[in-house]
Amino acid sequence: MKKLFDAADRYLKTADWKDMALIKFCLFSMGILAGTYIPRKNRDIARGIALGVFASTYIPLMAKFLPCLFPGKAED
Image 1 (tube, rainbow, N blue to C red):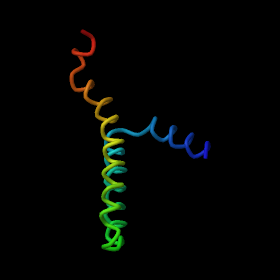
Image 2: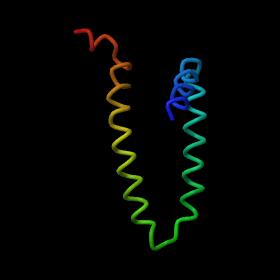
Image 3: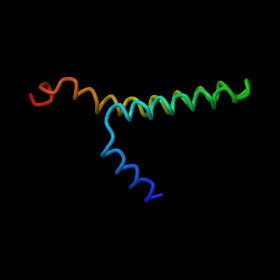
């Protein structure tokens, strides 16, 4: 697993925002495809899990990104 993470780190050093956007669209599309195969009786559980994962990843990402929008404010 360490080799996989090291390879991902090397890739990310060469990637720009466009590459990251493509990865996100790819993962989003994969999620939609997977979601179409969830039986109706399990969809509410899947939605709850997805909401939890979304919130627990989106909040830290935005906490790291928002200061980049206002670079002068962080230095005050």
